[in-house]
Length: 330
Ligand code: AHG
Ligand code: MN
Ligand code: MN
Image (cartoon, rainbow, N blue to C red; front, side, top):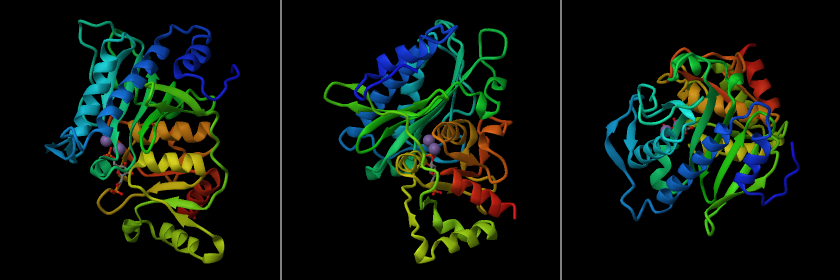
């Protein structure tokens, strides 16, 4: 990889790292530039949400049976609009849409499939806490102009790229194509993302856990015992939970920690979705030297069988994830 200084623009980074790849058509660079554009548009709306009448619910439920917030709809539309005409996607999968979206006949279709959670952390929109857009990008394998579910119902290791845009105290785009994880911070005064976190590494062991502990009585008793054991004061563990997966993951990526969303009585397969939550973040975790598991196997080896499939998720420091897997299989 070429040498990059902090402060390099996202555009230059993308051009220098991706256009140089053998066989590159430039479509992935264009796709990621459109992701950055959509991220800036959503960010602008998030920043003004309290002023622009964007807080609160739309009044309906999505395919997951969850109340849809105005920003969920705005983010979903914005990412789709930014990508559909760019000639880089042949299908878009979204948490907010039951079916995959194909590219309208008026536009050229491209070679990639974009899967997204347009707005992760919806329950935190009204509270000014970190929220984000999580995405995974596959290259088409099926024949014909349009993408098909089989293009994304694949092991996460086959992702071409994954990342997220974090709308937090600062706005960041974090991405990986498998070779390292890099973070770009939006400078709102010029409207550009600049490289701020080159080659982020997930520390092998740190003592912070992120989970909705209120559900712990519903977990596997072996996991409950593991959690109880962490509370021995001499071990020095801390809890850090925002309730936005993307915010919790980002904190742990930068500072170290492990995030868990185990199965509960209400969510027997866990709550988080494979295609646009677990797989993209697992791709980033492994590229940063961390790990992600469903409690039995690496998330990246698991093949989803439907677009909105859920999975338990244990993700973060390699050591903590390995310990949880050991506990759950003891
Ligand atoms: P989304 O807002 O996309 O529906 O995702 C919410 C998810 C995730 O961000 C978070 O980790 C989890 O829901 C929190 O769930 P609990 O409220 O059950 O802790
Ligand atoms: Mn989500
Ligand atoms: Mn969402």
